[in-house]
Amino acid sequence: DLIEQLREAAHPAAARELEDLRVFAEEGGQEESLALWDLTFWAERRREALYSYSDEELRQYFPLDSVLKGLFGVIERLFDARVVAADGEVDVWHPDVRFFRLEDPRTGETRASFFLDSFARPEEKRGGAWMDVCVGRSAVLDRKPVAYLTCNGSPPVGDTPSLLSFRDVETLF
Image (cartoon, rainbow, N blue to C red; front, side, top):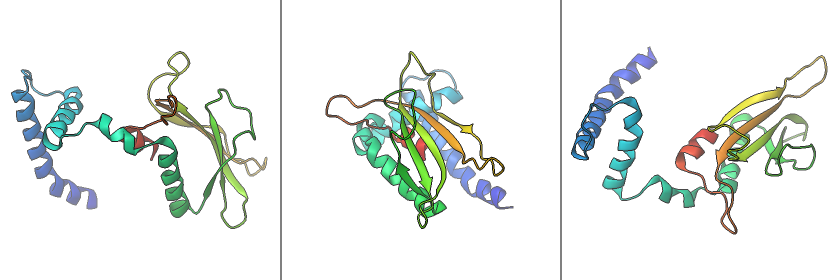
């Protein structure tokens, strides 16, 4: 079975990496055994020590508009659907929310659409990122599906665009 072959091939390297991280954390002052919630913190500290960069420094390479352009290019190649900005075509619940249509690239017919709510608003939204369907597809009612994707990125500040962390990019993709 492919999954078992992958596990067998990856397990020794993963065990070595975990042991290296345990030693690094111990040298950094971790007195208890590493718990699951410690791994991200110590992995980031180790990455900073080994490669002299932090996740925060990577943000400059991931402005939201560029990430979306890349994501939409992947969608077009993988799913043969063009993502088209359709801001202003429908009402939105906040001025920062964007609306997009997924179109057939040959006919221009809308296959589906989605709202993208990119920025954190702690007074209105819970943390994290999620998506759901707000209108289901129905052949009987001739209704196309509509989804919403909710994220909690940092909004643009002045002339500085919204910059995503690598984890934010992973979440979007």
